[in-house]
Length: 116
Image (cartoon, rainbow, N blue to C red):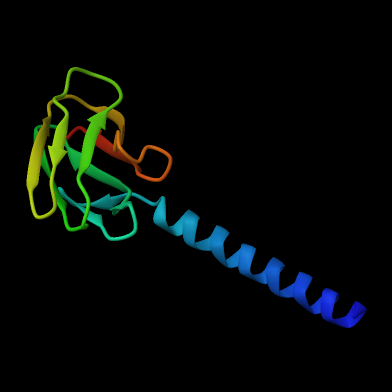
């Protein structure tokens, strides 16, 4: 019994380390102006980097309605049913976090806007 518990604890520790490595890799900014609302309630990529003046497009590839709400600034909110796309133009530098208002606990992202 003790050997089984030790083995189980070791497997859980290895699994947690794998999860941390994936989360860190996913947080690295990607140079793109397109974000997918992918299956499993997530933005892919979660963090993007664009130059000032770029229009970012989100496409809902999931089976549920999702939204994009930028938490700072005067940007419009998007409400996208499955298969729909919507765009927001980022006109000043900064880091702009956003969420899906329907699934805020899972769906978070960030647009990093840099000078050209």
